[in-house]
Image 1: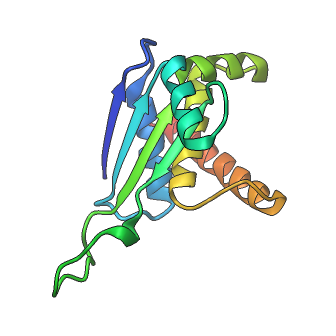
Image 2: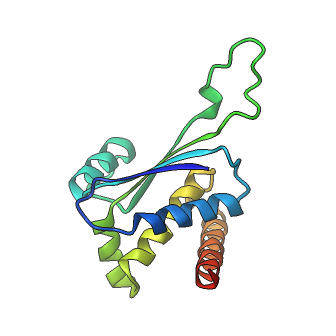
Length: 156
């Protein structure tokens, strides 16, 4: 599993833990071990710009997920695409927004970033929460993945 992370937010965060929770979620979801994922941590201004450009919303958000469209990859003759690394896409996190949400929710900023990372992974895997049924399924899975990661971490 290839996961790249870049912290351009100006906020100190435990990138090793973010990588670990992303890897755990991908493993638990049965994602191809050759899959590639990119995680970018940005400041509030850049997140607000991305949110406006891609989602049509004003102000910063906590997490954005940009899935790669595997269907658009042009395979040449005789290439089936089977066995190739899956380019999952990019997750963009805003640690400052996460810290504010964490304070309201009553847990640490690190816990909020872990939750948002799993949330982003699930979006890249096609989960959504626009409809009540989808929201229940996605958030239940998100909670299950976070709980199993925390249990694994404590045991380690």
